[in-house]
Image (cartoon, rainbow, N blue to C red; front, side):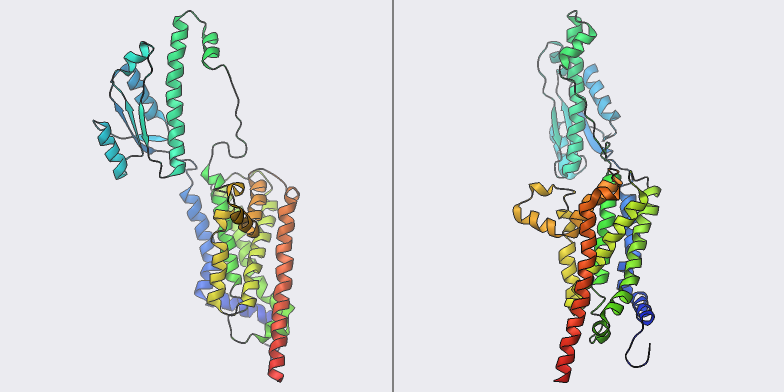
Length: 387
């Protein structure tokens, strides 16, 4: 500390570092919790796909055909077959108790009716409480019964003297190719983990910023030398946020095999800009709201719903009008679009110009606001002091 009440840039920086190190909650939020959550999310979704859904198949026919269907269910990676109950009602009871998520009933006489050309009606009861899991169930069940239907028709046409190719053409007259781009195997590891990690950076940086200018009652230095004190307090938190980004890009991505089609350097720079803009969002709040508790509540109110409104799990265009407006106000929404285009679609940073411009604006405008608010507060305080 210099003479009088003048604080040097170095002193102010060290003071902020000591405050971070000495404040347990701030140290946890800024430095410790983000990397821990990165690993937690990655380990949670490291299997990438939903597998081993508990299922039971009640074979009421006990024929060669029905046993083949049971074998197909057992071979599907989506299902883990449990011991089948004796009746459909017992299967429903298992669903109700949460012991299984799907019950398949193959009715008596299924093979006989198939051979006679009659339509058969297997029953499928699926737990629809979890949308993602139920989609996996219905997708695999549909594939299995379509395969069975195709096999029945193929055998019928072949027995009528039709060639195998002609029979296949009759069964499947429209052949289409589907190419799922960017996340072809619908991996949760590629789709969800990076988004959750950068959401963690968003919240932690903003919460840390919400404590920068309201940790003491009379913060005259922040208004007397607004640019110097702003920079001195900004740098330690910015470094913490950028280090968290480094852990994500340099450690989490390669360690867990998360797809990275774009430039790692470009992704690091782009995400670091987001961490800095998130920090500055919190710093604006801390310069306006002098209560740390209220400032933290404001940040939580703004950041907590960001993941829901980002469009990742539910499309923004399908939201009601007011919700779409709120989604566009949240910085995370625009950042995530560019983030996904870089790491999953392989775009260069120059290809996400709109998101990049918003990030730069999200740094420059809040920086000016913080400096202006602190200076204005100091001027008003000095005038009151003179009076």
